[in-house]
Length: 450
Image (cartoon, rainbow, N blue to C red; front, side, top):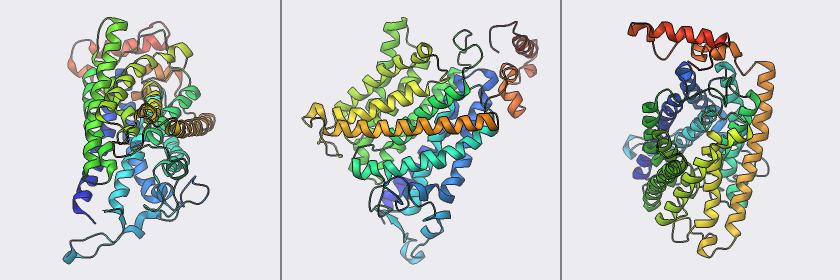
């Protein structure tokens, strides 16, 4: 056991855990005032639920010994994690007796747990304003169990690390996904698209203004995501070493380049650069560099990030063209950004980086590119199809979507009996006018949302 590696991984796990509250702020600021608490609660609900499921059987499904074709780990192998407990005593500094490489197994458990949490939380942005909280929690538990945990096994379970036999993408296909472009972002993006189709469009989508109610929260949330992402990517080195340092730098520069690319796209297309664009560009860059951060040079990372900023800025408009209501652009940023980042390994990878492979632009031909494409497509199709089935069953049995009247009145007051802002306490007519407007909209006499 190496204490420096252990300290870095535990610190990285804490950084990634902070990303879920950061995501709650990012998403919460992007919705209307009457939906902000429900939006944030979906992230906090995922944090609570997946923490428990991960300890019970999720870690075993993801990192237990494979039980068939590289598809899923044995869910009972580490059930409850009690078999991973044990130290050598105070005289030996409580050195762990169960290790993953040079760190305690439970440090690895903690690090991977926060990946599972934020992946589930990411999906919620596609169904903002219209998803009931109880069915969302049921969905989160089922989806994590039959989609995320198995896909994490495919991508992250390497032979001989924790399990004797791991997942097929990691060991047979040998696609490179250093920190989760497929398992996290393509997975969540495809699931978000499926749920958006199941729940349908928000009332007034494409007609009424649905502007972010608090861009200050959006930018603060994006800042926390950028901060936490250094744990997400550099922590995936599982050690305080040179690879972690390289990944830290590629993560920083790709994110900056993506923000510039998004802002430049806005400036050329719309005539102005926005704070929402800056925050969205940051997230797009973080998403894109996640799979490729160990395989590209810093210069390569600039290209990966800049292209991601432009492509994702253009992709968020696809929902209007194709008519699906991806409320907070989970598809445009996470699915498209995750696809680009995964494929970019096959283009920009350099053997000079720690992954040690060359992509097409560095003389490696198409070998790595086809591997990346197969891995990305497999996760996309599996996640979309299974999520669509789960969402449809919940919608038909429990009722996933709130009624139109409740949606207009405000999901916060209906689902949680709370509102984010007590306008009435501010004095004057602010509270009354907001309430009156909501009732007017419910009677279909007001087209502008509260």
